[in-house]
Length: 202
Image (cartoon, rainbow, N blue to C red; front, side, top):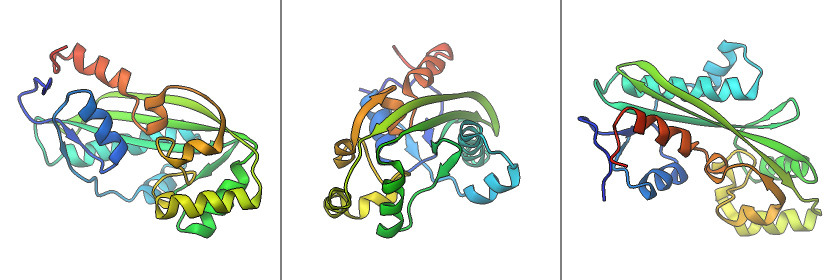
């Protein structure tokens, strides 16, 4: 059942499997369009250091980039940053970087900052940032290697080298935060915005 009531298609400016799953499970039909932006270049030029601000900036830029080519449509942009204290993490380039990230995160608490923005006609009409605190258990080199062997190439597709909805769940001792935030899309505030705009049926 499609609950979308907008006059033009809803667009997700992301190819994230998790984000697509969340929107689809919420009963929304949508199109996906990749936002062609230089994330690291935008981040460097902004001179921002706060993980939440960086995530929100990138979510906004993604939404605006796609919105500029789809007049009248509501475009969802999203981004997620991982911070261990003042240190920001990016997606690991391969197994060696993934192992290094996991060594640093093991036994500590880190924050996932998930940002969402909605643009229409190149202008941001909604934005939100949600935070989850992730407490990773202490692990030996053998345990880390076993996880990397089991997870395979998937570890390079997410910041922190894990997907909580998959094998990454084995890495954690405790989690404090919203499940949607952890998967990279603050779904509840997004749906509340769409309801306020009378864009969804429920």
